[in-house]
Image (tube, rainbow, N blue to C red):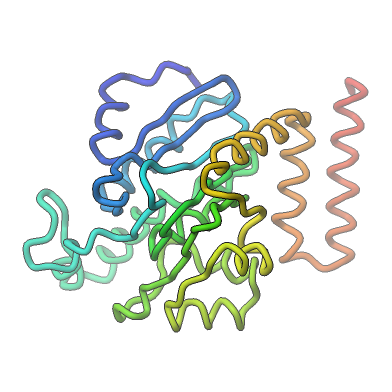
Length: 266
């Protein structure tokens, strides 16, 4: 894929609150609407999905970060009002659509959250301050999470009479288990840095001033490993939860055979 991304696309993405920076094998995606605490809109979701499609093929690691004191305060509440957001279909109008139209709309929103799990990428979320609702789910979309000590994760959808529907329920359950995931989602309570690390929700917690450096160090460590081996390893680990022990052993053998033959030039 070409590394040349049209300036018009970059400008449109930034207007929607998303900035993409490329540095060789590293891509940095920044939520850049700090005045609104990076509140999420369908336009932001379209921009995030477009960024995923536009990434050059040589990108190996994607770092997701945010400007300001909060990672993302979640969904823009204007989506719930009769006025809605200009140019967007508000939730009240969406609720009146057909089943197929409603399903298609939610699927289009989810596209912003799904590409982060691709096997050819390792994705890192650097999270500070509030990561609420859609913000929490965007952090969960990434493979790894480095958090500031002031982080506050919360899944507020249930309190609004909704469910988390932006592809966050599976990674949350995989990370912390069913019982804790249910309690976090049903109560909407805040999860701080210490609990996030203790439960596996975050890989590392650091002082807020050190967050960017810690995330950059992790990205550098990932880039130091051979790409093909990382891709195979990620695929093995992602598939492990759905395989039996014997199926996983077989998958390991198949992956190792590919690696050995590749290294031997066969």
